[in-house]
Structure formats: C-alpha cells, structure tokens
Image (cartoon, rainbow, N blue to C red; front, side, top):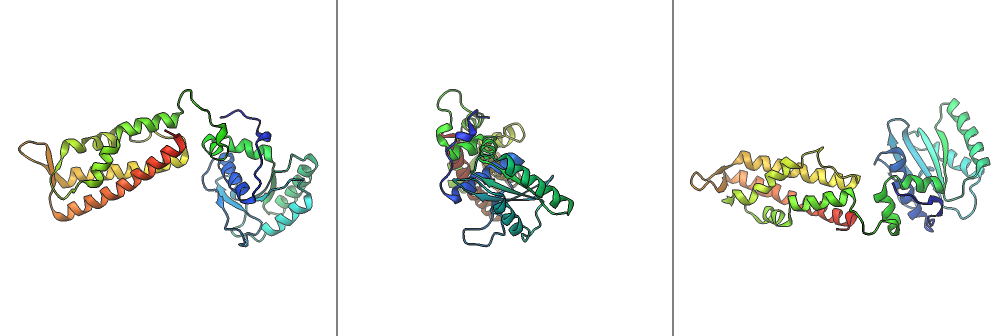
Length: 282
C-alpha cells in the first residue's frame, strides 16, 4: 500500500468528483465492489449519494458533503432524517465530508447513533477527508486513477504489469486476430490454434490472478470464453487423417456456432487488452 500523507491530498472542487472518490474509497474500506453512485444529479436520493452492501452491515448508504468549512451536527441530523425514507432500509449511514476531523462532532454523532441503534434504526457514522483518502489508498489502482502523479515511475514492474506482459506472450495479438478472421466452418490449421489450448490450460485460476478487481473480472470473462471455445473446437471438429495438421467441423451448424463464439471471444480479448494497457501502462 502506498505511503502518503493522506490528509494533504488535494480535495476535489466538484461534488460529483467527490462522490466518485468516496465510492472508490468505500470499496477499499468494506472490501467489496458493490458500491455505486445512487442516481444522477437532480434525482431524489433520500440522503444517499453512494450505495453498497456487505455481509456484516447489510445495506450501507453514504451521503457526501463537499465543504470548505466545517460540517455541523444540524446538517447531519437533516441527512439522517432524509435517509430514514430510503428504500431498501439502511443498516448504516455514513456522512462523508472533506471537512477536517472534528472531535466534538464525532461525539454528538456517536450519541445519536447509540439512540438510533437502541430504537432498531440504522446507525450513523462520519468519514472525514483523512479517513477517505486512507481508504482509497487501500486499492492503489483506484488511488492512481484519481491521483495519477502518485503512481511510481520506473523501477520494478507491479504484479499486474508483470502478469499482463506474460498474458500478451501467452495469448498474443496474432492468435486473437486468427480467431477473429478464421472461418471455423472450413478447414483450419490445428497447429496455429494450439496456443489457445495451452493458454486455457496454463492460465486456469487460481494460478494466475490480477490484483486489480476490474482487470481480474475482465480476465475471468475472457478466460471463460476461451476455455469454452477451446472445448467446443475439441468436441465438434476432427483432424485430417492424413497430415494430422488440419481440423474441420462435422457440420455447418457447428461451424456457425464456432464462428459466433470466436467473435464474442475476440470482443472480450479487446476489452481486456484496453483495460490492461490503461491500468498497467504497458
């Protein structure tokens, strides 16, 4: 995890940007990708700007307050009353603010939260700027998306960068292009398609996994498609009995199925490559 003076990170000047930062910070705090923005500007949000869920706390709502000055208790009470109308019912409400940490306010909110908990209502919590940036730093890839100048330059490559380079060697662009352009309803080279079988065998989870969640999700989609496509080639095509270097499908329907799967696989490959280049900068 990066070492940085979190409270010294520049605060956003736009409320929409602040909400995105809070959303990404919440993913690190609660270790879940369920957090998302709640609606768009101008829509009724019932005191909730960011929404997520985890197994321990249930539905979690976050109200974002971009302030130059201090957050006050009256504002917190107003947001709590608004969130009481939110559906589904919250387990916790956080008020996230760019304001500096305020011990008296923390105590007031703690007392309010205890009263509500005894009444069977959602609890209330504060997130100050130093806590938000510390949570954001738990996921370096997200931190660097918002503060790209913090990303280390040079030196040893990161885990994901190294793994992405390995991937491009195991599943090179020419192989992906072959899959895209080949008519699998006709004869095709068994030798040229062989790297696909090696890939789906050597890269099976959990032996190679990306740490960035978004990159790993995209890789999983690609790998599942590659594995299914390789399996269908093995099941629905046969080798030439002579040279043993060419394969062909049993029927036209099988060829059409393979061609459709090849198109879908190439699309997932392109998505993963673009994302990998964006996050790994390689």
